[in-house]
Picture 1 (tube, rainbow, N blue to C red):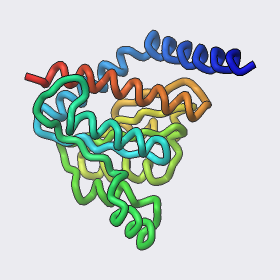
Picture 2 (picture 1 turned 45 degrees about the vertical axis):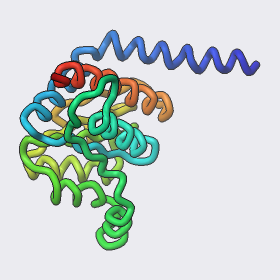
Picture 3 (picture 1 turned 180 degrees about the horizontal axis):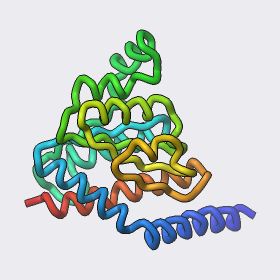
Picture 4 (picture 1 turned 180 degrees about the vertical axis):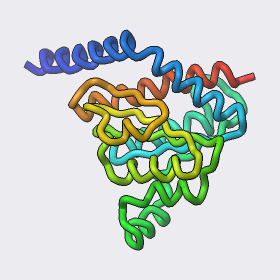
Length: 190
């Protein structure tokens, strides 16, 4: 029973990954090109999300600043999920919906790129972040799940993992971000 459940779970993930690879490789390549162009022009990648997606935002920003596969110069990336004083002050004083938007207003400008991870595309704080980015001339990339929610209409580039399972969506978001980071690192390491 346990081995069967393990096989079923991992086979389901592999099938979903294969489906995304077959159907959305061009979207992933376009996102990688946007990341590369942003970094090459001196812009910053800003990452955000909630819950497990917040952890993914932090994980991915670290790959750019520190390293992914090779030693190379640091790349400009910030996770908007890490400053607990800022997050709690903003949530307390302005509401949780503003925690990412307020940081975008303070830190981002034209030439930067906001990368949002959301399994539903419906979280008010990521929607507000996208709106704040658009108001400042900041590009928006969204890695989403389910139907993409409201966020899909606010992003310049969208990748929707075709699943309703939060865990599978987050697992693929991170795998896709690693593929993108590998491509960007390879192109910019010189």
